[in-house]
Length: 289
Length: 350
Ligand SMILES: Nc1ncnc2c1ncn2[C@@H]1O[C@H](COP(=O)(O)OP(=O)(O)OP(=O)(O)O)[C@@H](O)[C@H]1O
Ligand SMILES: [Mg+2]
Image (cartoon, rainbow over all chains, first blue to last red; front, side, top):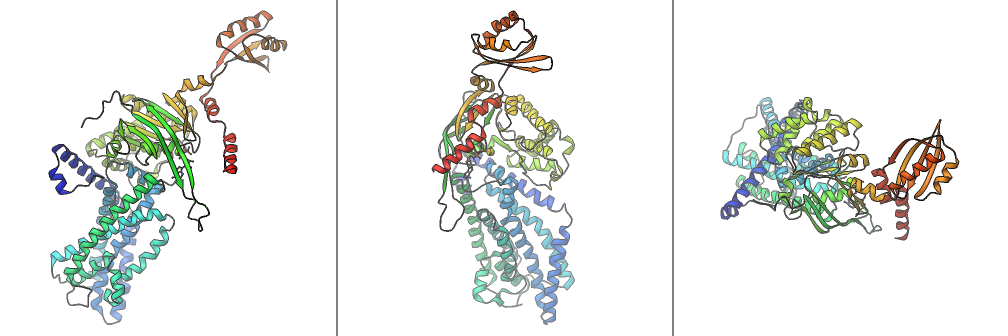
């Protein structure tokens, strides 16, 4: 609906500009509103400590022990990093991709579409809330894992690490938002898709093994999932000279930038398609009751 | 940002709205079910004035929810126009959305882990209501619907009745001008539905610019709440007016019920032969007789009673029988069984 580009805003008449400002204000409020339940309520039930910190740590320990037994303890660091990033992927799958499907069942979807701000702001709120809530868990896994196994990091370039991390997060949640709309088209298959995607991705993206080990073709496909390049770049930048990588970190960050645009654009496009399908064609039910 | 003079423009207006669904018969392989076309609304034109509680009555599948979806910008009309405060619902979407809200029956919206207050605050955010004002409104609304003590309770712990009252607050926290209620009291017990109705009335009294469009299957609810109603059947508006208009429009004859003493069976025959008496039926009840009369016009009651007295009967009580909205409704849309037969017939023919 109302998209705000800087140039359009600059050339707009004062009245229009204030309208745009109002739109922006409303959008941001909508985003904060939707992020809120994720931030506050996610920590209301303390069992997350078990499911989202203790369990991933156990999984990491298992891989770490295997690497130790194989005489390659230097890989333990990449497993821990991978475990931290995996938290985001799981969050994207269950709390982004499947989210509009749940929102439809509760009747929220209808109310979100009816609200004055574009639903992209709702998606943004879901993403930011999810990212921040997961960051706490990911950090816990990372810190505890590093302490347990005595992993040390040598950061080559802070700006690049931060950029790689942020780009892969934004691209990842962009992908999640895109899937969220598309999942609405495949109601019943949602669970099946989730189950099918989750585990192979853990392997494909090289969460627990170096991607390069998968061979160039598989690695190429895996690179489409933002987690892969993000992880690879971050690893190169904190464990320099450790192992063979896909590309140089600079290139990986550049490609991640492209993925950000592709997935966020895709999210906007698929949301518009969903709205068209529901509103004009009447072929998408907004509510299941 | 002026918009059309609020005094003259109807709060809700539809002009010849038509909505067709092309339902695909599932994803059947081989395309055996080619696709069915449902005309949910067929030329609906309505004008709803500001300040009114307007009832939309119709059987299941009549098109009520479809019309509400169009008015709430969730669905586009296939043809025709719809306006909220004079603004086109398909073109001035954002402005329309700013001033409307909707509550449906059995709604499970929001997030169970939030408290009632947090939940309402979240929805206020979506409408750009500053937090301070939002919390003020939340306090007012919750205490008005009797949920003051539940403000900090988790949403999942609310009973169905409490939940629906919270949903009402959810809709009103953005201070809408036009409220859509789609079967808002379905599934609520007597007291809970009464408190919803009471609050809707109270909310309407607070500001003359407010308007409600309500759908319901409970005729007494429409009768109790609505200034005007429209009856919709198979996507057509078949009647419109005040509830009294609808009842009266239906009544061909003036009906009375009389309690009699000193009754003789011969009286019935005598009454039936009188001018202006369409029907007379007597029924013995203990030591009394209950007489039901249908008269051509109301005025005939006076000479009729006089003639009973002359013959030696004695009238103990007299009551005019008003038709109920339910009777009016059934007359207008036919009864369920009849429409079932119609539908089956149509299927055989089609
Ligand atoms: N998305 C859709 N696709 C196909 N047909 C639909 C769709 N939505 C509604 N219909 C059909 O349109 C007609 C009107 O439905 P609608 O939901 O508006 O009725 P209603 O008056 O609200 O009924 P109820 O009292 O049961 O809520 C029905 O025949 C219904 O089956
Ligand atoms: Mg309905």
